Amino acid sequence: MPTVECDPEEAADRLREAGVTVESGNTDHELWRASRGDATAVAYDGKVVVQGATPDDIALVLRDGGGGRAHVYFDGASRGNPGPASVGWAVVTSDGIVADGGERIGTTTNNKAEYEALIRALEAVRDLGFDEIDVRGDSELIVKQVRGEWNTNDPDLREYRVRVRELLTGFDRWSLQHVPRDANRHADELANEALDG
Image 1 (cartoon, rainbow, N blue to C red):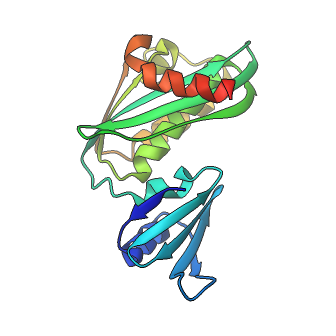
Image 2: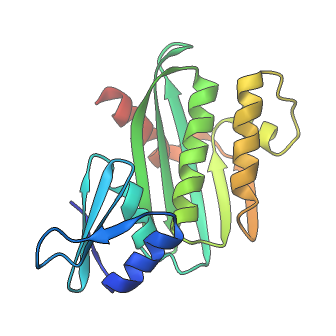
Image 3: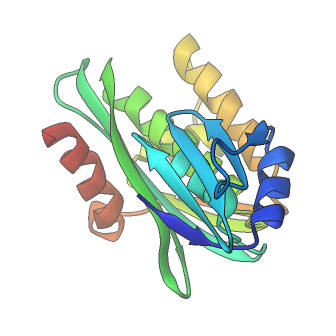
C-alpha cells in the first residue's frame, strides 16, 4: 500500500484536475476518498494512502513530478505471436526510477504488446506532470512507425500509432529513440516478470 506524503487538499485538487471524483471520507479520520481504475485513495492528515490491485492508477497523479524532464523506457513481451503478453515501463529522472510498472495484458502479438507498453508509459509520465520526455524502446518497428519513418499497414497498429501521437502532443518536447535491449533492461525485466507471474 503506497503512502504519499502530501497536502490532502492539494492532492484532491490534482485528482479533480485529472478527472477523478473526490468524495467524503467514510470515517471521522478520513478527509476524503477517490477511486480510479483499480485503485482507491484515502486521505488523512498529511498523507494519502492508496490501496487496490493497481495503486499507480492514482499514486502517479498524486506524486508531484513538478514538470521538468524524464527518461521513459518501455517494452512489450509476447510468448507466441499471438500469445500470452505483458508490458513493462519505467520513468527515470536524475533522482533514479520515480515510477515503473509491469502487467499481463491477455493474448496479443508482440507488436501490439510493444504499443500497449508505450501507451502505459506515456500515460504514467503524463500523470506525473513532466513537460519534456526522452522515450526509449528496443522495438525498432514501433519507434520508426511512430516517428513516421516506416508505414503502418496493419489497421490495429495504425490506431495504436494515432493514440501514441496524441499522447506525445501533450508534452512541450519529446524524443523517441530505438535502443539495444541491454539499454532497456529494466522495462524488459518488468514485462517478463509480469508474464512469468
